[in-house]
Image 1 (cartoon, rainbow, N blue to C red):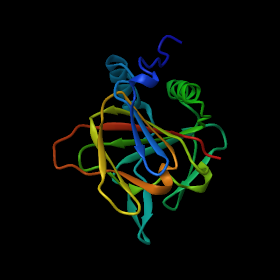
Image 2 (tube, rainbow, N blue to C red):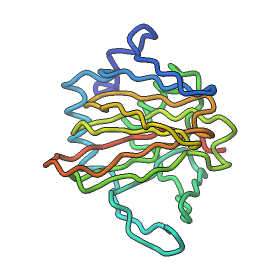
Image 3 (cartoon, rainbow, N blue to C red):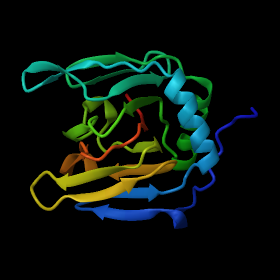
Length: 206
């Protein structure tokens, strides 16, 4: 395939590794996809994915998500979160190729991806954990970022100082271990004038 996704960096030595007690691990590759290819994929997926703004249930009432989303994966995969159930649409060719590459590199059988489009600094994701039962006991979540760099924050559920990392264009962030049990994460709003960002969160839904 001429336009196959071929990330330029995927070596253990190139990752920033952050332990998150008691046994969570955060790994970050700042340039996992080269800049030219990242530009092309951002343009392609900005235009071609089925972006929608969906309602979610928050504190007992329905509100519109402050971002656009879509969900792709293997046939029959369904993912329930925030009171909504998403049925996976078939993989677009290059998105499926990226999922396969990640599955092989991380030795995780990813079968779906939840895509988020943050249109500007007003779009956000509140504090949460990816701890839905269908993700398994200690899920591995692989997060690819394209477009505007945004600040990603984590904080211990038991209390303590938040940590943050700037997720850049073409980067890969992998959360694993017991991180989802003991830590929350968010993508906060920003008062700065920011461009759009695509975030692809690959996961295995059981």
